[in-house]
Length: 111
Image 1 (tube, rainbow, N blue to C red):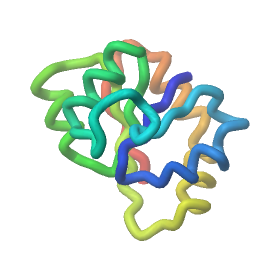
Image 2: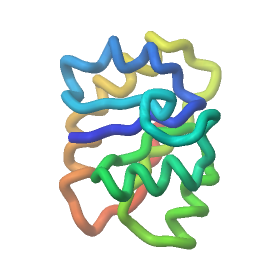
Image 3: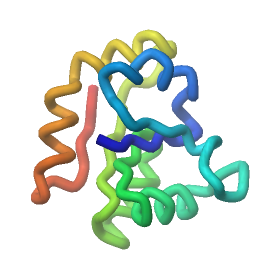
């Protein structure tokens, strides 16, 4: 399972979830111009088979405009700290795995 975290999610989350989600990157760590633009993140995720994890509704618009891949997971959980986000992702691990493996699903919102 390959997750690409958008800039609006702390890179520190990866350290907390790496045992549960084996292949995670933060957009600051990929070879694109920084600060990363949404379309560059999108293109990287598409070319490298990542699912985008974000707080940003703009990725939903890109999904509607361009279609999948990549798939998008939108966290609708503002005002949570890094540890709370990591705990939420770990608690939703099975749903995330199911979403990524289901070719009929394109977007997952986590509350």
